Image 1: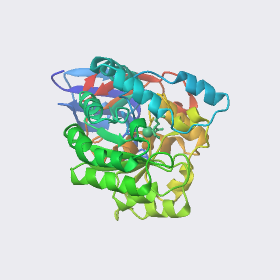
Image 2: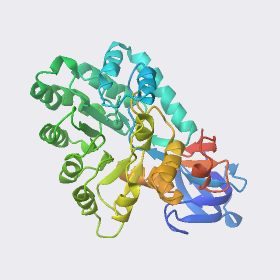
Image 3: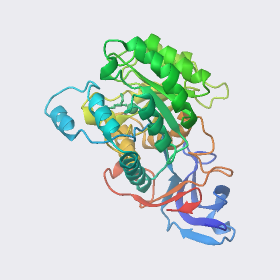
Image 4: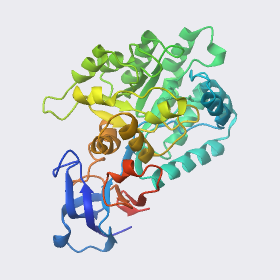
Length: 395
Ligand code: NIG
Ligand code: FE
């Protein structure tokens, strides 16, 4: 779309910048967009003229959701495993290998169709930025093609060759770590921005995780990791040690883990350098206790919310669903949850151009079918996303 775009008649504008409360709310506001960027925010009554116009009709407008943790490159599904869990089976992560088999057997186009379907689903639910991980290929060729296909859809791509040790390396995990750090990383790095490891009992221990993340860092990738999901462990503190942008899951934390995250606080009071990303869709779908968001927030830790969209532990692409869960089950205030799903996700990706609606930011806006952000948690399961504008373009 060429020319400027004015979104006016906004009853409640969440800026995550200057304004009322933690969300920087402005009332009766308008946003002017030029060349994919926000160039002006102010009272609707004083809005400048523009080439194109969206009338929000008094509704709430917020920054597009930033989903900083998703596994979209896979084939098949695990609905039967989900049903078994709902009948009482525990979640162990062992099902990952089922998806690895299906993914290896899939064609590039089959993988492409799935990633586009899920990305489209998320976009219709207000997600304007979505991180995408590999991790269901686990061979040099399958990890490289997973990331090549992911990079067609997102710039936020993550190499997760260390998701689990694949069956063919079951009795020689050291050799698999060598493969991940050597030829697999070399093949994946051109398509990846981040490196991730599933640091958990039954996946990778802390020494293997440290070695893999350090190799990724040396290859120029940023660090993030799956940590403390299924039980307590060293993952969170390893993330802090390696200056991870985010440690994800954080379901089982010790006081020392929380203190280590809090100690990464920026000196200007703008939160922590390492973000705790909480993934309540995983606890929902594995019927597990939710992480204690309140404890992290009260310690001053920056919290993000993301979907963890994957066929095993959390097959949802819906950020509004995660916001509702965070409020109902994790004692987050609605404003905290909305911040975590927008600006928090941006922090988890070390981005300052998204997750906010202030001049200079990318013009990613969501118009709700509701007068306030509160409705995202207050009206769970209801399609409240009326319109999405991404990069200044109405979708
Ligand atoms: O984030 N924890 C590891 N990876 C995924 C689960 C993947 C799967 O079960 O297929 C997660 O929950
Ligand atoms: Fe995950």
